Length: 210
Length: 210
Image (cartoon, rainbow over the protein chains, first blue to last red):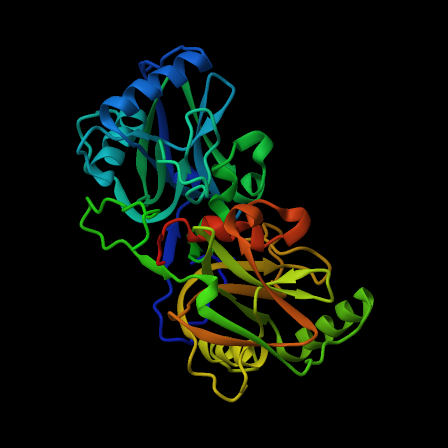
């Protein structure tokens, strides 16, 4: 147990939820062939989302929150696309696919050497849900008061990392460990969802292992 | 069940957590004698916190997140002090007092006709924890990387309101119902903690009853 850990007093007979965190150095990082991303304009993307919504209804995305330790502070794993925007690892569910199956599939595609081995990701609690009420608007952590049918739901899940593992990342993506204190409320760099992750994690006791 | 409710598909065999919300109009609001607040300078406050820390160690505060429905959108109950700043109902724990006992005591003091009836507040999940590492600094939803011993911990708890009840508020406080969409990320008006509450609630399914 790290000397940085503050034990949360459990004086209500509730079992405190503890997340074990291991050093960045205990993981191996390698690369693999690039994966395909659509290169489309914003207008094309909106048009595609509209067609998909007409055909299949609400679009559901699942994303993973994974933590490692560096300099005695929790860091979150983010993917950087084309040296510009940051995203949590994850993606859109297939029709009738469960959240856990879809998230495991996406994580293996983006972070494993073999994308068919999908069962070695430990998907934990749902941390939060964000909603898009129009194809052109931002995501919000509540259903908008305008009574419109939501077009997209994004669900964040805690994924607990083991003591050690390999991350094999497509060459057109970068996997970065970013300190919680850097993403907190930093909307300019990290968009609408990621800056809220430190708050979503704050009810857990993060146990840093050295 | 309201027609505004979106059912979260439970395709992972997890029980979705549902919060029942009732209209603002189903609650009664009255007033009672003012309660005492220290009228002190910032410097005095810092000095008082330092003395208390030396004597008793970490200061723990507990606060309540309570929701009502208005215009078909969830609203959060906030107290306004001296027509200026907003706070969640709650306050500091006594030495050796449990979170739930302390929160019930504070809620009865601020919102009940009889402050000795403390057992009629249904305290639910801890939603988040915020830390103050120095007496002069803001609260953050993580332990700061500076390895300092934290001086204050603030814990937010969901408090589930029944279908109907009376709120009896001291005359020097105002109790307000503020829409989630107004507090979200509105740090200028609501400070460091309250603007994150919509995110902390987003994993729940809010079931609006009419």
